[in-house]
Length: 137
Image (tube, rainbow, N blue to C red):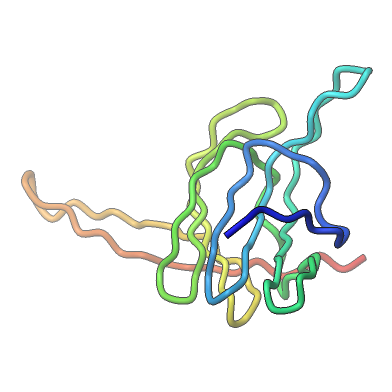
């Protein structure tokens, strides 16, 4: 096994992004670009995938709105969904939201938890997932 360079045009250089490997495809979501000569760092909310079979990159155009731009977030796989949690926004503020990206429908869902105190010792938690419609341009 050896390393080889990929010549396909892909996402711009970044840091603080997530990488998820699922069914032979690598997903790259968000992150930030390195500061240029002006010292400005751009925070990203894009999603790219790399297909090993074709050795090609593709920028994904989700069927829903994207989560807010972020870097330093965490991720995991749950079924056919990529779970995205937290990170920091463009102002450096910590984010505590949880998003699911469906690899099947290409839709992002914001997970919301609803808590209800049953009594002094028990709490019920309900999960609600909402997709956000794409903004029309």
